[in-house]
Length: 290
Image (cartoon, rainbow, N blue to C red; front, side):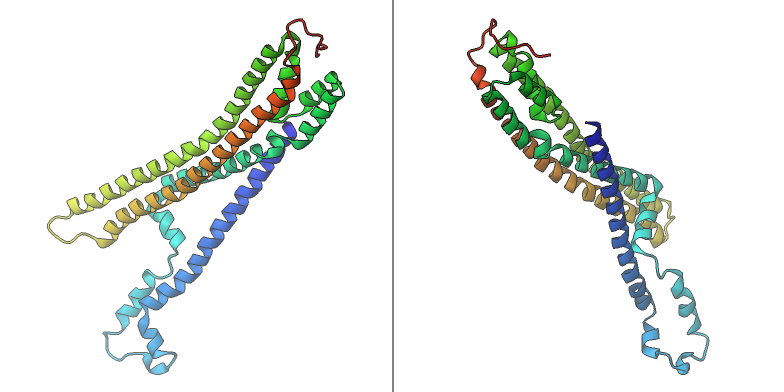
C-alpha cells in the first residue's frame, strides 16, 4: 500500500507540473500573438508610412498620438487576467485547479482494474480452492492489497463460523472499501461545486466595484478604465470558475460510474468464489485462519 501511495503521489506531482507548464505555454503563445496584434492596431499609421524618412510630419499635430500609443500596447492576456482577478482569486483558483488534478490522478490510479479486481488474484485464488489449499488461498488474498483481496480474506477468516457470517464479513469490508473510494471521489464533486461559487463571488464583487465607480461620479462621465476593471474581474472569475468546474463534474461522474461497475464486479466474483462453501455450517470442518 505504501508503494502504491508513493507512486500515486509521484504521478500526481509530475502530472500537475506538466499541466502547469502546458497552461503557461498556452498563455505564452497567446501573449506572443496578442502583443504584435495590439501594437499594430494601435499604430496603423506606421504600416502605411513604412520605413521612409518622410514619415515625420511637419507641424505639431502628429507627435502626440505616437507618444501616447505605447502606454497601453503589449499587455498580454495572462497579465490582464491576473490583474483583473487580483491575488486572492488567482491563488484560490490555482489551489483548486492543482487539487483537482491531484485528485483526478489519485482516483484514476485507485480505480484501475488491477487495484480493484486483479485477474491474477482471481485465477490464483480459484486454483488454490480447487486444490483445497485453503490456508494458501487465505494467505494469497490477505497479502493482496486490492479491493477483491480484502473482501476474500475477510470471508475466509469468518468461514469457520459459518457461510452466513463469512458473507456478512465480506459485505462489511466491501462497504468500507467502497466508502473509501467514494469519499475520495466526492472531493472532485466538491471542487466542481465550489469553483462556480467562487467565480460568482468575484462576479458580484466586480459588479459592485463598477457600480461604485458610477455612484462616485458626480454628474460627469465615469472613467472607462475603472469601469472596465470591475467588469473584467466579474467576467474572468466567472470564466475561470466554470473552466475548473466543468471538467471536475465530468470526471467525477465518469469515475463514479467506473467505480460502481468495479464494485459490482467485486461482489459478483467474491460471492461466486465463496459459493462452494454454502453448505459450511457453524461446526464446519474448515481449517481456522491465522
